[in-house]
Image (cartoon, rainbow, N blue to C red; front, side, top):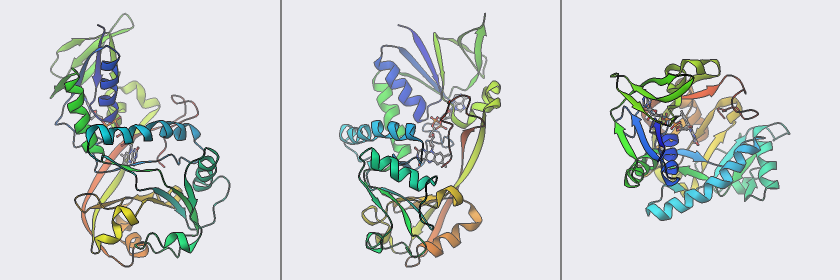
Length: 313
Ligand SMILES: Cc1cc2nc3c(=O)[nH]c(=O)nc-3n(C[C@H](O)[C@H](O)[C@H](O)COP(=O)(O)OP(=O)(O)OC[C@H]3O[C@@H](n4cnc5c(N)ncnc54)[C@H](O)[C@@H]3O)c2cc1C
């Protein structure tokens, strides 16, 4: 059986290890841990799952494949890990061709998704926490939502182990073991060499630091995440508060309904988060519980992914 080493046990590494195992490989995963790693991009309370990706139809196609799989996992794990609460991208100006929201709307409409155009006060009444005045247009994607990402990674790690994936938690990759122009395995930071037929690198934002040749096309970038506790939690319950992006192309703001610990998260710059909450959720002031800095990778060029560079939208 060919041996594969997967380096990194975030969502990419753990799902790759499960799939490789299913295809008959002997799989080992290495990660310094503890797992889920607190600094991994995958280790967060919530991640948006949506098919709205502006004009980037490639991502819409991927979402069409993944959303049914999320529903299947909810049944298989008998836990609601994916919450189909809907996702909206709204803007203060009317949507026009070229805008992220407009292109999302058109592509989702053409591909037969369940959507609504957020340009009537009737629709905004569904979401009472929002000050709808500034927002005139947008797209509401009904069969989208969010996943409890750290819980997903923890459950998938357990599943990988049960399928026979060997997990080396506490092992830190140092370099590829190369000779004669071939990768023959990996070297750990304690000098141990582990041979393999194939090596899969899934080390997220660490990539440009650990594999220096990737610096030409990857750089790490960051986003702060705020966890907030609203005074009127009922207004932020998933039934009446969707995952949202608010003028996301220019502000970068997006956020989530309350999770099971009654926390809601918003992402954007620290100094302006307070004014954002005051302006948008006037009925229920929020208290900041914590801030977390995140890093993720972005491509400098389109070289690696052809027409599909990683985007921060
Ligand atoms: C703030 C933020 C918000 C996001 N929001 C969304 C969203 O709403 N929806 C969405 O779909 N995506 C979102 N993303 C993107 C998504 O989180 C990432 O694409 C995904 O989590 C990347 O997973 P990964 O497994 O590639 O990397 P990571 O989860 O970062 O995992 C990398 C792993 O590599 C390990 N590692 C590091 N160094 C070594 C080493 N030397 N040896 C061995 N292992 C090592 C780490 O310990 C870690 O476990 C967001 C990202 C960020 C940063």
